[in-house]
Amino acid sequence: MAEIVVLGAGLNGLVTAMLLARDGHSVQVLERDEAAPGDADTVWDQWERPGVNQFRQLHFMLPRWRALMQRELPAVLEQVIAFGGARLNVFGELPPDLTGGRRDGDERFDTVTARRPVLEAAAAEVAQRTHGVSIRRGVTVRGLVTGRRLVAAAPHVTGVVIDSGAVLRADLVVDATGRRSPIGAMVESAGGRRPHEEREDSGFVYYARHFRSPDGSRPAALGTLLQHFDSLSVLTLPGDNGTWGVGFTTSARDKHLRGLRDTASWQAALKLYPTAAHWGEAEPITDVQVIAGIEDRYHRFVVDGEPVVTGLVAVGDAWACTNPSLGRGASIGLLHACALRDLLRDVSPDQPEKLVRRFDEITESTVASLYRMTLAFDRHRLNELAADVAGETYQTSDPSWAMTKALYAAAQQDPDVLRAYASVMSMLSTPQEALAAPGMVGKVLTLGANAPQYPSPGPGRAELLSTITTASS
Ligand SMILES: Cc1cc2nc3c(=O)[nH]c(=O)nc-3n(C[C@H](O)[C@H](O)[C@H](O)COP(=O)(O)OP(=O)(O)OC[C@H]3O[C@@H](n4cnc5c(N)ncnc54)[C@H](O)[C@@H]3O)c2cc1C
Image 1 (cartoon, protein in one colour):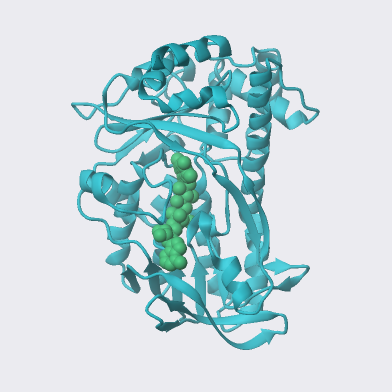
Image 2 (cartoon, rainbow, N blue to C red; image 1 turned 180 degrees about the horizontal axis):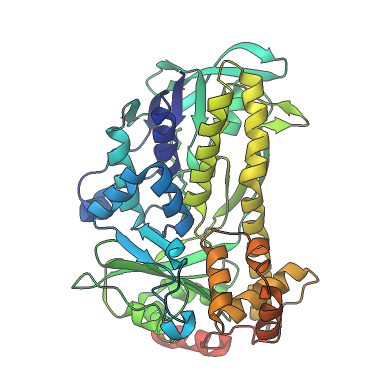
């Protein structure tokens, strides 16, 4: 069994470490930030995590994540619950007139979720008692240590250098340093070519607040977790211990909506959305938290058919990340970590070239399509938001966007379509799989093709802008 060093103790670094240790590997996790300071409220209030920009931003764990965790690491789910996490059914939360009532199979929409710091504290708690995992915190990885090359053009990583100057040796280094991963520059400093990188600002901005109820209850869901309107989308996400998050997400270019930074404007705007307004009628536990400059980033470590490095792989956000409004980061990261664990059962780190090549292939066949789908959705949505600003209707020749819109609109009108939509949004099926059910495409087109662009009740742009301006003055 291998000595493995995982860089980063974020959500995906921790699950990767646990999965690998449970297979008998000896795993050391290196994390620059300090440990969780205590219970759910203490971690929310006090845990300093400069390494994760989005640490106190809206997070929700999809049913796919819950299902995978139930299979792979159920102790983490139990710990999330023990910390006050919410156990819920994203479908069952919706009104029966939308869902048609509970049906067999709806249990696939079960999930367990919490505010991000609480999720991570739970994962860290289980990781530190997992045999074979050791976590060193307050340690920043500064560079790679290399040995004799096994592929002429690729440095072979045999360890890392940390800030004290100490060298830690490993049979395999797993980069899980998140969306700002420095690994490309480190590979270059080690004498290799940079991994292939696609990188651009996703173009979205989030204006979010968290709330708490006095009695541990949460607001009734009158619409889906992510609802789209003229000029913005609204997220309503249950959390732990009677908390929840509400966020507006829109184009970062829409300067007229920047007034949503203002608390009074934010609150006034939320009141305009009948299916979300009541989520703002509680004790706020944050001001409006703004996050922009969120990059889409994607890497490959095999370039022009040749590995750029051996002895090193990347998982989770360090491999690829997108605008997060579909809430897929942890689910994709977990799938990716499982793929690495499975590969290491067949290919050991003492076959470094084969390992990097096979992991590249497996990454492309398991998770890259999810990254691409998310990117495609975001690009269309951003164009649609730009058209809203211009007072136009977004037109595209891409039939998949028309189908995406029709599915969303039809889901508000038909319980079968709503299940198909929920299964895509829960990452339980691809749109193709969901639409393959007998009669589904016909239903979606009949109900959705000529539906209003934004089927849920909400203000037009002019009303939204005037509300924001009036509230701030
Ligand atoms: C606004 C926003 C909302 C989101 N909402 C959701 C959601 O609802 N659902 C969802 O599933 N996902 C969501 N995501 C995505 C999710 O946050 C990420 O997918 C997830 O955090 C990735 O985990 P990770 O372990 O790969 O990286 P990270 O969580 O970023 O962890 C990386 C770790 O590496 C450490 N590190 C970095 N460099 C070094 C170094 N040199 N040495 C040592 N340690 C280092 C950092 O300190 C950090 O702890 C959201 C993202 C954003 C931006």
